[in-house]
Amino acid sequence: MSADSSSPPNFPFAPPFDPPFDPPFDPPFDIVGFDLDGTLLDTSGDLTAAVNHALGLAGRPPLTIAQVKTMIGGGGAAMLRLALEQSGGCPPEDFAGYHRELLTHYDAHIADLTQPYPGLIDALDALAAKSVTLAVATNKGEGRAVKLLGLMGMLERFACVIGGDTLGPGKAKPSPAPIIEMIARCGGGRAAFVGDSIFDVTAAKAAGIPAIAVSFGFLNGPVEALGADAVVDHYDDLLPALARLGG
Image (tube, rainbow, N blue to C red; front, side, top):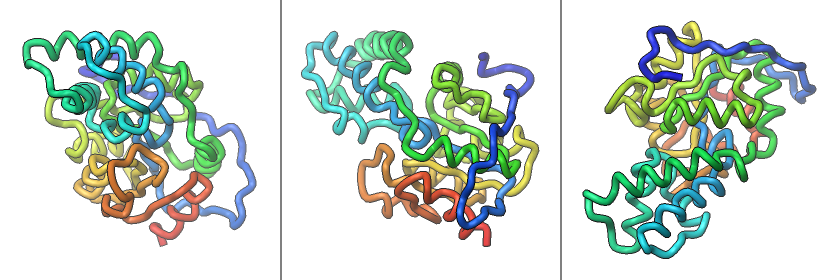
């Protein structure tokens, strides 16, 4: 999928069923958007493997998943820079090559270890059954985000996927531009955004919509420090949190 396509992507959207939730949920939002890495999907295993592949080529020691988790959120290049800084940095002339190797490895193993977070599918089903439009705004490249969601069997759930490169340089989160574009592509309406990083919370608030932080994501500090309007510890908590925010 081209990031500079003249028309926004639209994917088939069909709620599979209306699962029972107690109490019944009356959605206060027309649109609920999600970050991808650390929010919808635990991608830490595959990202760590890609980072360690690049570090190995640079002659550096591997990092643990726990270490890499704190580096995710700003895109692949930012993640690799942080990883290299753990062992002394990297000459600028060498960085592009290591970054290419990381991406090549990741593309070949993008869904080997990745899994949706517990309760996610039921929460998405419940929102879709209530005619809430679902969308993704991620700092992952659009093509990779679409590929990953497709491999996970989830792409059709989302009305649009906005990547870190979709709107051009300087318009990834924490810019509000991806959130604003997400709302526009979903047809407008009252929206909320769910994420796991300061990039997500900052972007949502700058776009004028509520931000929900997940405490199980790729955090580099206390989730309360993100300043979100609500925090959820499990996807079972998402619908009640949305109801409270919309009240």
